[in-house]
Image (cartoon, rainbow, N blue to C red):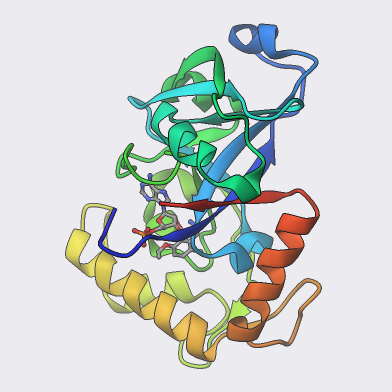
Length: 223
Ligand code: A2H
């Protein structure tokens, strides 16, 4: 939480049955992992999502129909976002740890902060240095989604390589890698895929956000 409120988009990732035994009592409901991102335009390149293994999460009844998996703290914040049409008091149906979530395709990332966003993070290894450097991302094929003239089609890979980043613990270098890819992606990037293929990231970003919100695939989240 910096000085400026951050304008996040919560991406809804549906959890598809059959559920593991721990989740059985949620059967019959629409369950989503809700990940906070500042880059909704990168969702074409999403490969997986991240949770903090030691983090405390819950499955909360958010609307009449939807159940979101996120941190308790973020449900309080969400209740204030009138536009998101969230119940004033989200009921916790099931308490979960990050480790419980590791059996439903959410992989561990140790640098997740539980007081930021929802504690659930989407993974876009093509354009996010943090995601690219997580050891668990290795088995995934990286999906090129944005071309940046100086950095090619997989900017996170190129920048992490150029800055000689070895591990996720190379904190300072990763901050620089994020700054570079974020800035250049926004100013010079062009989309390679999707409804807005060929368009500049700057122009497509608000359109993709609008599309995700209108189609019910995402909700807004200010923090
Ligand atoms: B971003 P800011 Cl492609 N702990 O989404 C750690 N990181 C978190 C988090 C948490 N609790 N909640 C969200 N985040 C990440 C996509 C992305 C992101 C791309 C490129 C850069 C990028 C896919 N991961 O972030 O500190 C989420 O990762 C760098 C700007 O609020 C979220 O957006 O500025 C970003 O951090 C928000 O970071």
